[in-house]
View 1: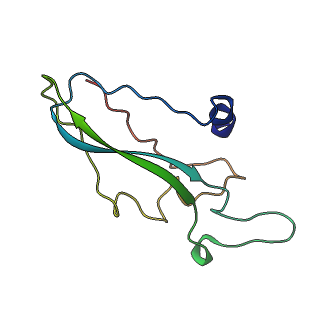
View 2 (view 1 turned 135 degrees about the horizontal axis):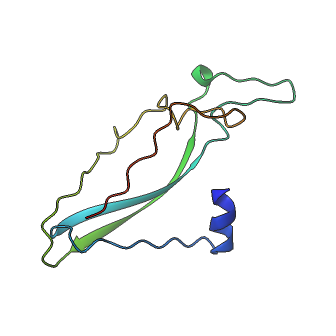
View 3 (view 1 turned 120 degrees about the vertical axis):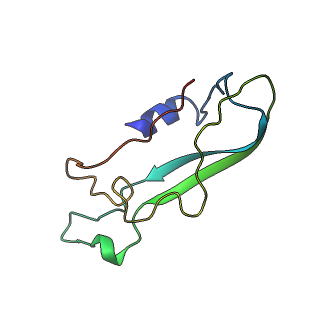
Length: 109
């Protein structure tokens, strides 16, 4: 599980910014999404997705000033609005095999 990797790394995550990204100001958002609240199942308790907002988000942001000679403009999103609580992968029953979930594409040059 992803949480095991996070614990093994003492909560640290590293990323490499590709050299091809055009210079400018960027806000980098890293988030952990706790999906176990997407639906409660077990112990006789069932809570539907419509009665609970779903996943819990734990995020961190860092303001970056990218310099250099890159010329590629990566796709960006706006918050709020990047996704909804009802989107597949956000509202999910972790006790069933997920279907219809698309993992976001990782940017590369």
